Length: 453
Image: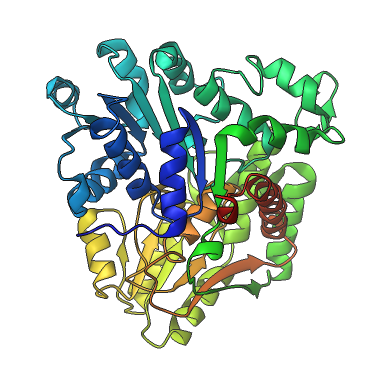
């Protein structure tokens, strides 16, 4: 297939080629893989600036998306690539092949640094946000070899899913600390102050006055950002809530958990040792079931299952993508669908994804962690229902973007959230909105202005 880049795509290609260090914050659906491969092809075969490229990506993206994009476009036919996933033997064999681009999943970065000679002069980190934890093994391993690469490209659509603190590690991968500093403590001191604390323990940080713009100014010279809505004819995105209500007895159990960090259930007890555990327990209870202290599942209500059944009925046969979070949610959803003789399938394999995109699955069940990156599901439907909501803005946005992306044939994409009234569900939705505002501000601050090019 012949690749004819849009203006924004050509702008991004030129940006990567002219910037040895490039943070490319492209919204979902803008074709970041094709853009990056085009720039790499030029740098490999036209400018001879690089000779051996390492691509680090989520597993499914490494295994499927990058190879598929290389095979898809005519102008990339000269690129020799090797995919280093699978068993250790298979990965070693992949790195021994003579290729231009070597593709590995992010979970094996630590292994690669320990077992493979690092002879790459360019690194592409697909989903730069995967390296937001400065204390993770994958971050530390990559930083050991980062100085050996003369070119680095960081790709993501969600650079600051949990606020601007995430940017420290992500940009250190890119510039080794030139812009935001080499040490997290100095970065915190320079731009943040403690927010929620308990004695010497700091639970969260708040930006200092003027710090947000200072951070944007620091990274602006190596950062480009684009929103899909600015450059593509996107369908209308409609967000709605389907509110459900607990019965009085169910409410008492939930309130007891909130106040006492414990709840006595029919077949067991649920306790929370800290705020993090409490959050998880409350999310489960809002969804309708909870893991007890002995590991069993205690069912509390079926309000969300009833709502999901009503939503499916209202679809009148049109396909519905359902996002769940907990295993017991999946089990209860499947049990209800079987009871009502509703055809469904889990989207947990390449075969099931093909079936969904072919219109063969009326109700598809997916976990946000597996839907986060690289899946094109827009051919199968245009309605997403969140049975259980995630705190992660990155996973939330990426899951929505499986349907709300280029190639979606429907004029409207509907995202339905089943919310249990007066529960933690409401707090999660509010938190996602606040995080989205922070991230949108970052993207707007470094947004590419094509008119100036």
